[in-house]
Length: 132
Image (cartoon, rainbow, N blue to C red):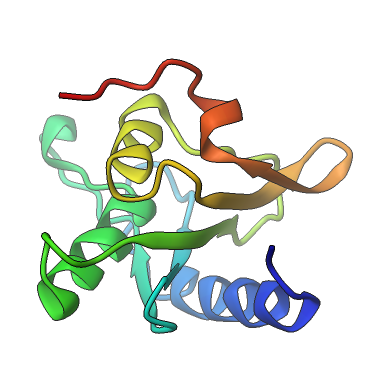
């Protein structure tokens, strides 16, 4: 369960980091904030590239930052918030859903939807997520 305070903090961090995104092609700046089970918050933003396949989503940037600090064998996601500057509906893409699932199969995901803030488990976003 995620407290209202934790939700607010994650959304605030994600909104702040969205302003730092590098999005010269889409002009769609996205920020993400990950709360790990150790209680740490890590942020990431989207970084575009002229070779679109080299672009990284905000969610994966935040998760990879968390892994770099806590270690891939230990880092587990409790929650992740994803926002954009325009406050448009913005759920994680399929690749990000899989990465979130890999590091937190019970993680809570927060993002703007057409009906306001959506708070949902990653398992609901990615039923039958890939496992090894």
